[in-house]
Each structure stands twice: as structure tokens, then as C-alpha cells.
Length: 328
Image (cartoon, rainbow, N blue to C red; front, side, top):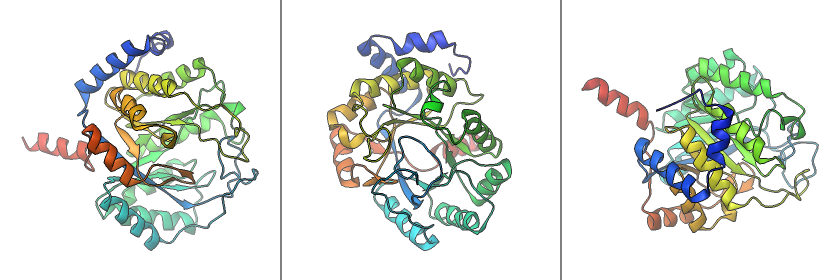
């Protein structure tokens, strides 16, 4: 049963279940609600890089940190469409465009992004954007342009949030999610582990996601990528078992959600990624970069898919299934 009324104690008990039992329970839920051989492959492109005014402690694109990220202005529509077409040919069915902005502004750059959304949608890919905070009218404009999903992560718990970001509030993030939902765009929202948070913070973040009025259609679980020059560069490496535990708990709490094994895959073996898929992950980012951080190549992922018997999920699958049911 899909629930949005999880008590924090229930989430805590789930998260603290012995690991093998937790994986088994998550795999059982996953099999009941999803095709376990199917993984959505998404590609993320930075369409405007660096120079961000925010102070997210993990992010190499923040202007205040001295990292090796060069600032680049907004790409041209033709460049973006060409990249999207290559990603589609390599097996991606969702294309996400990220801009290092604090918030969207109603200007010519936003008009250009709307044109990009329409153009990528026309080649048959699910289009996602992550552009920072959105007003309700901006969310509506993106929806009208053909946007399928909007990513806006909570990152961590409300209680720990100010230790990582001070340039916007947790409520700002929740408001953007509400604006996206009201515009009829699907929600992509997850978090990052390895920020120095406690297990309690992870539990609280999952509880927040699982008790939204509607579960996010996509929940990325990221392992911190430690970037030299950021405040978190010396944090310890995230343990694979912590990733598995997060994914398994998210899968049980949100059975139909695409749980995305996101940043940090370059540090994982195929066997470790297989455990994540077994625990309920059914989405990844493909391509050699996630905005500015390394990621396995399409070729590496294709070999892994062949070995594990996985296949890419087709674009707009839910909508096609609903159309078939309506016809019947």
C-alpha cells in the first residue's frame, strides 16, 4: 500500500532493520511494484556552469570556493540538443539540464531555457531541469514548454540543513517543490549522504520525502563526491552499506518511486552497484559527468547492464501505460 502517513518511529525502525533483512524486504517491495530488470538511464548536462552565489558546502560551482571549475555562460540551444541526441543514442531516456543559479529569473536566459526544453522534448526524451528556486508562474512556463520533471533536492534533514547551506532555507526548497507539483510537473527530489550528518538526519530526510502529499516520482540518493576546495573536501568516504541502507529504506517507504543511484558511482564496483539495484535502485545517471563531477561512461554502464541482465526503461512509460489502460 502506498502511504504518505509514515510516523518517524516507523521510518527509524525500518532504517535500523538488520541489513540483510532490510535488503530482502526492499527487494520484495521492488518486485511487487516495478520491473526489477528495468533501469531508467538519465543524462545530466550543465548548461550554465560555475559562479553560483550560494554557499552549499559540497558544491564546486559555488563562486566563493576555490575549485577547478571554470565559469561558463549559458550554452546555445543547438549545443544542448546535439548533446541530448547523443545521450538518447547511447540509451538515455531522460535528459536533465542543470544551471548554477540560486533561482530562476524572468529574463532572456530563462526564455532560452524554455526553448531548450521544447527542443529536447521534441526528440522524444523526458526533459528534466534543475535551475534553483522557482516561482509558481515560472514552473507553469516550464510545464507549458514541455518539461517532464524538475529536480530540487532537500539534501539533508531540516535540522542539519543550516550546517550545509545558509543562503536559502529548507522552507524555500519545499515551496519550490510545491510550485512544481501545482504546475503538473513530476518531482525529482532526494539528498546527499556523507555531509557529516547523523543517521537520525538521514531518517528525518527520508521521512520528509515519504510524507509529502505525493511521493516524488524520482528520489536521487547521492554519495558525497569530495571536491578539493570545498568545505567538505576532507569528509570520510561514504560506506557502500550506508548507500544500500538508504536505497532500501527509500524503496520500502516509496514503492513506486524511481530511486536513483546517483553521485558516487565512480567509487563503486559493479558488485556494489548490483547490491544497490537489488535493494531497489532503478535509475542511474549515464555519461562521463554529473554537472562537473566524474561519472561512469555509457560504455561501462552498458557492460554492467549486460552482466546483470538489466535494460533501459523507455521514455514516458507511465503515460503510455495509462493511455493503454484508457483505450482498454
